[in-house]
Length: 171
Image: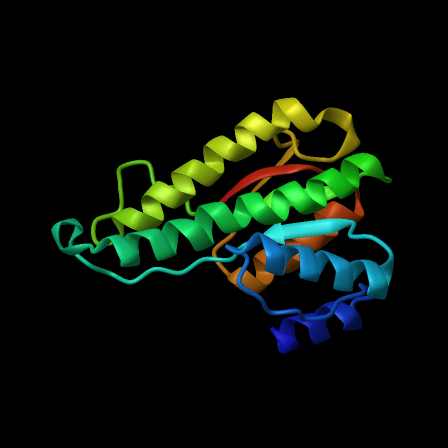
């Protein structure tokens, strides 16, 4: 994470790393407070927190399933709610939810596929609710990206230009 922040700073963006468990609303509130102290506001939020472990669906235990759902889906919601509300109450901003688009399921990681499908539907739903106050709306820009570092640079450039983005294939 520090290497990404360094790269972004070299390109003229303000960036710092604040690790935390985004599945916990209290942690997200602390992250928001730190960002407010450091920068005043957040202009661009890229939700990409996630984790999974390959396993047959029949072997999932509730604890493992819930851990992935809480990080991938609930964490995205927690971050979007806190920062989306700030963007709506302030000068707007851009929120991008990074997912893998899995059209035919994803054997071995059913928990991730389920969580990311939830993130996709959450994004579509919020697009109609947040409206012009924040750039959470169906995309005006799309891209095929296969490299995460390339994707992050592209996302930031689109946000800098005021573009809104719906989804990315190949991440």
